[in-house]
Length: 225
Image 1 (cartoon, one colour):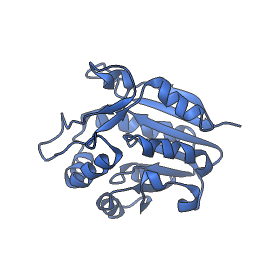
Image 2 (cartoon, one colour; image 1 turned 45 degrees about the horizontal axis):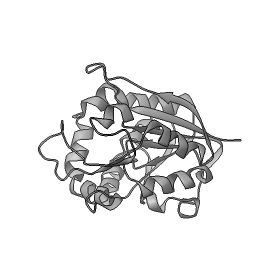
Image 3 (cartoon, helix red, strand yellow; image 1 turned 45 degrees about the vertical axis):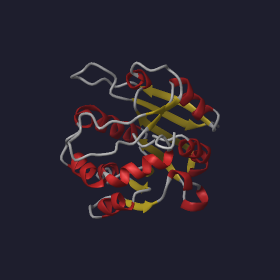
């Protein structure tokens, strides 16, 4: 199980910075260009936040997009090279920080919204983030997650929580050592929100127009009153 862990995810991403930056900026990931990029942008803009925390921001594409609408975004990521790539472009502020370190104490500011766009791959780190999320949000704040749809991502395995091997299928040959990911059922995602002070206001299930399969699932949680 040592190759299926939160640390293994980090190790893998550190090895794949260059091809990832290229893939995102050159539009090489079809599911993103066809569907999921616009889905997350629309979900954010719908609630008109003035400040956003982008957790697992990668090379910073979402903060750059939100800056076009005048939204202040702080992007955080555990990989220094990804943050360095983000800082070379206009739009957003950035900081090297892991999910396991996220808290009001380390960030010392609150936001109208927290966004996680395909960045919640781990186990313990994700659980930690959920315990801290409400304390990082202003009154009425939203917590938005876009992730692999459990139905599409389950494959032929049992529909139960647990670690899965990663793959770079559909990506260029420049990628190596794919990160594992922790599979969660729809009920587990729901429970993470509800037990940590959120009410799920919306669940979106966008389809890939080419494959007619689930491209992702989007959860929008609001801090419970």
